[in-house]
Amino acid sequence: MERERIDEALELLWILSEEEHHDLKRFRLSSDDHDVESLINILNEEGLSVVRNNEIRLTDTGKGLAKGLIRRYRLAERLFTDVFDLSKEIIDEDACKMEHILSEELTDSVCTFLGHPPTCPHGKPIPRGECCKKYRLNVQPVVVRLTDFEVGQTGRIVFITPSEAARISRLSSIGIIAGTVIKLVQKKPSIVLQIDETMIAIDPELAKEVFVKRVV
Ligand SMILES: [Zn+2]
Ligand SMILES: [Zn+2]
Image 1 (cartoon, rainbow, N blue to C red):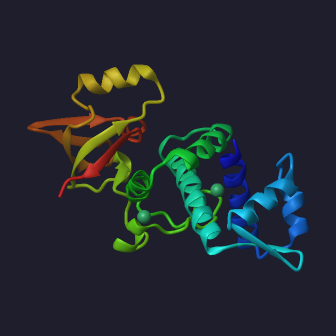
Image 2 (cartoon, helix red, strand yellow):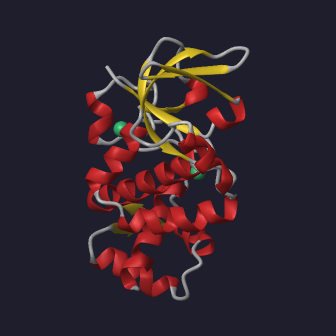
Image 3 (cartoon, helix red, strand yellow):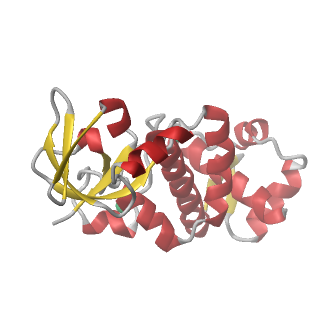
């Protein structure tokens, strides 16, 4: 429980400092902790923050932890918004859970999968990770919707997110299942794929729910 209180406080301090707010009063007012004074003491005792001249600031250790939490939260927001089209309430709640449980490796995988996005859906910066340094920023996401795939490219279907359950069986009956290697032959007027020697035309609405990863 205490861990979570500390995490929430670290995140709040990070967000406030993004807006150049360091005053202690502001932190007290913004925190929804049941005992802000004890929380501030804990943060200071653990060397995560320092209070001086009525200002509270993260220490380097505090910053490091806060950066990781914010990074996981904002990446989770991106993942849930861009890939799963989840509602706002679910995104808030689940992004909060993800920030506490994602390991560093998994976080970097999510980041890479999304193409190292620079901001969350609200336009707030996502702190960069080790994975981002290795790649050029703003590269194409690794996994894209079939509708965003380029004609002539070959890719492997990674997952399908059907809005209706019936669709998945319709798709699988024509060979569109996770793991299948496809070549995008045409996008207009209809979407045409090649699977082995077979050409398959699919509805653009359906194609939007199919995610592919480029095979090089
Ligand atoms: Zn956000
Ligand atoms: Zn990255």
